[in-house]
Amino acid sequence: METEALERPADLTIWRTLPASSPLAQPERYDTLREALAAAAGALSDPAKQPWIITEEGEILSPNWIRTYLN
Image 1 (tube, rainbow, N blue to C red):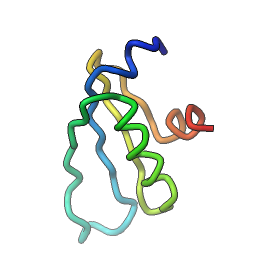
Image 2 (cartoon, rainbow, N blue to C red; image 1 turned 45 degrees about the horizontal axis):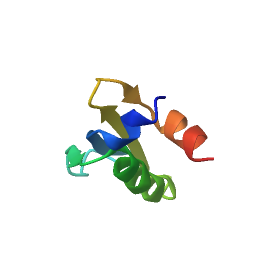
Image 3 (cartoon, one colour; image 1 turned 60 degrees about the vertical axis):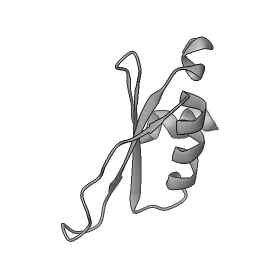
């Protein structure tokens, strides 16, 4: 991933692995991919949450990609 991409906007959606009674996931826009990754890191600590990020370029970052990148 390019360093410049970390400074571009990104959308974070946190899907829940709980039953259908959970509210629908809504994407949240972050000013930078760095901010979205930081928010996703917090969600990864909860096994019932699965963060997915879509970059400004349209790249889809899965929970496994995020976990690997943060480690």
